[in-house]
Amino acid sequence: MMRTFQSSLYLKDPKALPIYVERKVHRNVDLPPVHDHEFYELVYIVHGHAAHYFENKYYPLHAGDMILIQPGQFHTYVLDEGTSFELINCLFLPDLLEREWRNAIDPQDHIEAFLLHPFIKREDEFHPRISMELADARRIEKLLEEMLEEQAQNKAFVKTVIRLKLFELFHLMIRLQDEVYQKEKLANSQPNDFRMVTIRKIHQFLAENSEQKHCIDQLASLLGVSSRHLNRLFKQDTGKTVMEMLHYVRIERAKQLLMHTNDKVVDIAAKVGYEDTSFFTKLFIRKVKCSPGKYREEMQFEKV
Image 1 (tube, helix red, strand yellow):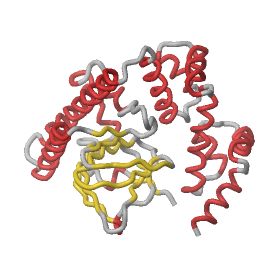
Image 2 (tube, rainbow, N blue to C red):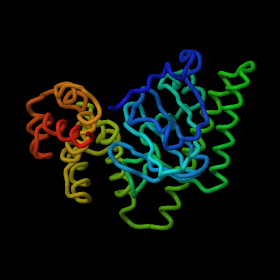
Image 3 (spheres, rainbow, N blue to C red):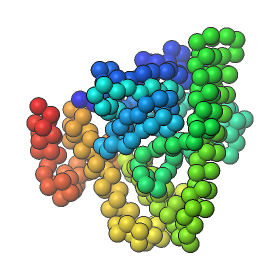
């Protein structure tokens, strides 16, 4: 059964400081269950390696990697027998980006855009990860360790210092992400490079905003194109329309909720973006070849 981790488990005073940092070593015996949470989780892998179970797929993680998990996204880790890995977690609430701070620290909203589309990668569009070179990884690790030290010492102005260090971390990650894109462009310079980046952004946006009622219109507006042009561009590259991909993402999300929660089908339909439960059920049967209730029964039977 999937669990939801609440911010109250970690944040003592979320209104004053909506940030918590911790260092952990995970082994097979203490891995967290499949879970989501109401906060963002920025994870830096210090040592070792693991498989990251994220939204029903597995991705490799190695020392020097960083991932950003958004509120509501399912994940956990998988380890080989007898192995372990060390990480630093930085948990923060959306309240971190108060308007006064954004205006002073990030007037062009780079951080907000980064949180919406973190670490878009060509080979795994749905996994928000970046792999860093050694020097960059050590700089990120040092900044996180400084945040840990500030949190432990709890000296004067600790709340301001930790918040500023996290903003510095965001800007470093945005810079590294841009540098990765530039290197990819030089290595794979093609006339359709812009189109490929656009396609990745479409995949990422649908993965993160599929439950929204008018997400395709929002996406077209974000990319500055018409919905018709968006569909044509996407179908040329994938063979599917944006709406077909949206249905795919929603059904995959519904399958996760059916497997890991006891929510009613009507509630799951609403959570993934369908107000009409009858339409959702018919679509689910067409795509999965069985009803939502039957799918849940089969998945629970396999777990026994």
